Image 1 (spheres, helix red, strand yellow):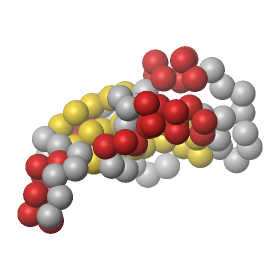
Image 2 (cartoon, rainbow, N blue to C red):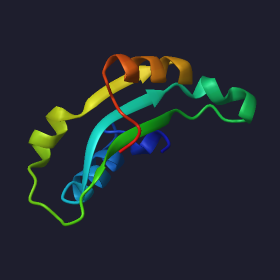
Image 3 (cartoon, one colour):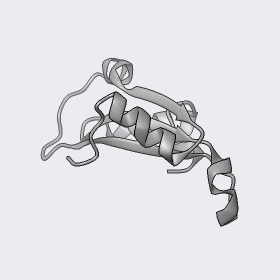
Length: 92
């Protein structure tokens, strides 16, 4: 997702809060947009990992928010390196 998809924006926070009964966000890795300059954009990218529930669940957004791992990196390689160190999985 682009810049607005992160938890540090009102739009992103509202979006993920509304989906929190159906999706559990595990981590958000913000990748600096300069990484994509050669592709014609400098918009920061949010790589979001999580799980989708088969059925809706009651959830407390504030508790869920405190469990989400937020990382900012300057490259895709750094994103995967940090994800590996934190044991974040991309194969749910």
